[in-house]
Image 1: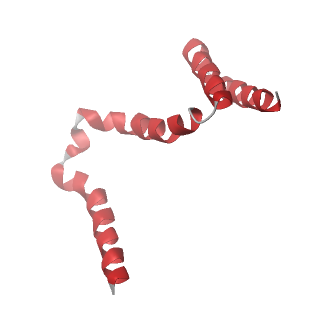
Image 2: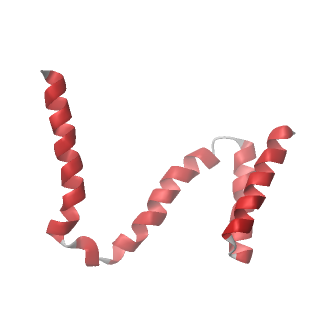
Length: 88
């Protein structure tokens, strides 16, 4: 019976997090535009900082993005750098 309460509780929490913006009208707030970069950072940075090879490749990707603003070039540089660094 405890598992049923747990599943229902998780369903309620999931539902509340999805409908809260509609009731609080936070869609017009300024901070909403910062949500995608924050989520992306939370997903990417722990993996990038997990090993020295990934940290170097991440730094190269960051440098290419800042200098050229070309996402495809940054992807190719990062993938190539990680491949080469893992071979060494």
